[in-house]
Length: 341
Image 1 (tube, rainbow, N blue to C red):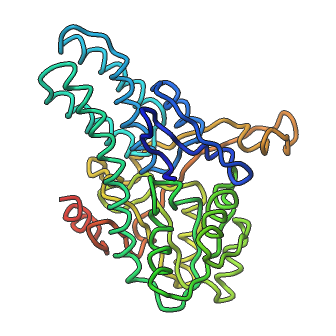
Image 2: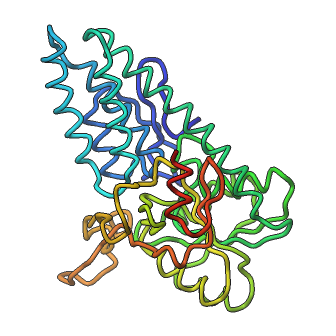
């Protein structure tokens, strides 16, 4: 199934916190439950978060009882505010909510608004798959016929509705018959690489080797990594990119070893309102994500914990940004603006 989709009058999503040991499907028509799912990373990855946010607005609108459009819009505004507060870094969430708000503004009456909002969320679901396939096709052109690729975190089908961004590029290259091997960073502290990316690659039949995050330099120095491909949660106008914590370190290592560093993300992840990555808000998450694994404590009681969910890779470390509208190379300011147009 897709990571998130509308089935039989409900939003159905894969609970990614249960993978790879269990495949659990959550079904709901309560927008509050969708907000919790976003906060708790049951649904994660910038594109998937965007679609989840759209569905949250749509099902939230269905709950509203209002005799007039003015009253409906006032209550919908509160729903949108709650959805926006779910997570601060992934710009797709805010992009999706704004897009849904514009749809509601164009409706002639309350009933029409509710129908239009659900239709728009379903359209965004389908659109995401098509965008990822286009992105994969553009990115596959950068991959040699035989290549060893390193990736960090999860940017596959599970981070989108389907197909993936960074893994979508790898998947497209694999479908073209290219001979690939993927090094998968485990991605501390929540192990999205070990739990999700490794699982996806095994399902696709793409050869993969799981490594701890601090092994990347060793394999780069040994000449076993030909390129790095990662996703993104927000890209500033100059190309500075926020992605899962640890990506910046991978980028520095790639630069040192002369290895291309590619970012794959839809244009909805580009935030042209931000001049640089210095303006990207970085989410600080629960310390227990660092001190425990699946509820089992691994750290000394009482120790202080820092848990930023993302870091920002300066654009000078990025070789190219792959979008559904083509591959953007430096200078990114002009290229990203053109891709978004």
